[in-house]
Length: 236
Length: 105
Image 1 (cartoon, rainbow over the protein chains, first blue to last red):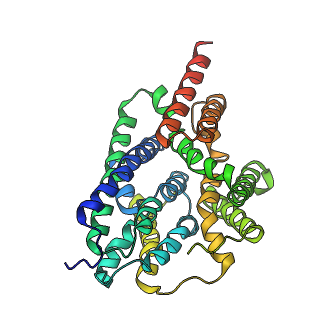
Image 2 (tube, rainbow over the protein chains, first blue to last red; image 1 turned 60 degrees about the vertical axis):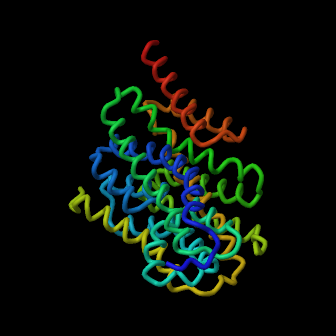
Image 3 (tube, helix red, strand yellow; image 1 turned 135 degrees about the vertical axis):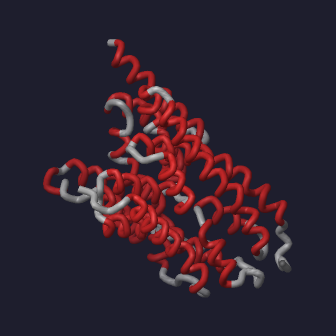
């Protein structure tokens, strides 16, 4: 493998450590929630192994638990994961010539918010060796955390397991609130989205809308209103 | 009402998620020009997480009271800039304590 970029395998592993630790805890929350919704530990781990995304997995979990339609699942995953398409498009500008099509197909699997952010922040171009090493620890952490959470969720007393149900949501709050309190655009997107979501869930006339579609409609409206009011500046 | 096996759900979920990530990686070689579309995609993650959290967070624990307590703790700590894990554990602890109190009273 001739890596053209100066970023080494060692550097990728090192950059992956903080993501690994973060993923251990977030996926732990997912594992607990999955078994509390009646999934087996194996199913929870398989979802994490094949999806590697917190919001998409949680939405999928809710649809599966509610026995929702496959088309609802597809719509929800498309919209919730739409941001990854943008990240992948941005990342293509950073890849060097070691990134052949088969290698891109492997690396594309691991485009998450955090891996994207780290890879995108590197100076110069990014090669396949760096990307492989960067994605390896986070993927391991995501699966290990899910396994630990699912096992803990099936072993611990009900009172503790019930309290851990809020874990993933608290992390979402911790992800969203700091930027929302600093950026009017992010705040607007969140407020509109959350407002629509609550209305759809509470109003009896709209209660026919299932949870997956509710997230789709709310998020699209929130992001669209904010993008119309506050178009982002060119970042590069 | 579900007549689809669990593994089909998981496979569909995985395929859709993978396609969204990998296809642009292979196919797209140019930048998105529309400012609206770029902004829309930039704000989307926050909008998604907000819609997933509200109102679902209030039914995520043993009672609406414990969920509200955990949620309040998370909001305060998040605004103070605490890390994900600290915020999450504090929210769980608050929810646990409130539910324990309710059981005792």
